[in-house]
Length: 310
Image (cartoon, rainbow, N blue to C red):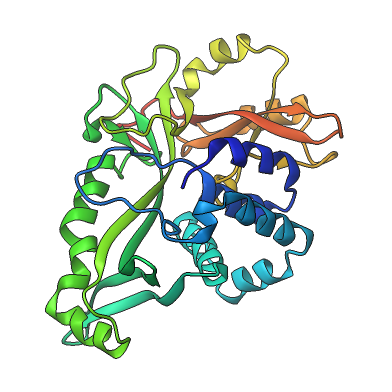
């Protein structure tokens, strides 16, 4: 149900960071358009998909009064971006008028050992579903193979994620050990699928092919080594840049007047950046008519040994 045009319009209106992230999760395009395993938008059978303006109106309501969303997130605080993404999805699915969340993060055990968790078990007009959710940020290196796309820490890879989904996560609900838990929830045979959101980052300045199967409208940015920063910055000499903390990586940044870094603050931050620093997500900001600063570009700045070291 990705709808980049409606998402763009919404992000011009929404101001609450968590609601902006929620809108991005629901409306942003998938990373992959062609997959060997079934990819299914969690709201595929919902009236919110058939009438996306209804969903947009609900998001505006959340922006006007975000207490419910903030309480939901505070009830189970998370530090990992992937878990934050899951919590956003859970909030929306509980609110969807025609989707039943039967269970979330359901552990499957064998002889007291946890084999894994089922991210979501849903019931809707199309049946009963086991869905795995993920949000990823991959940096392209040499080619279009999934193995050429690495996480900013260089340990995660797109091919490894797809393999883990296919070989472990998606089949988990079909295992004998899962049957007891599904029976307790009065679930029959569930259909397994996944939804993968995120961004793909291309090497500056020459780029590289997209990974095979990439969605035509996938979210994107660039990446570069620290040694290339001066040359890159020279192409946009008056640009305002600012790093984002990990939990702010989802929706394009909106930074209020007075909270945007002056250029000299960023330069001081850059001078203090260690040569072996972890990858940093930077956003280029432009001031809007209201005096707020909006993201217009994002990049990963990685150390000069990346991906060999990180």
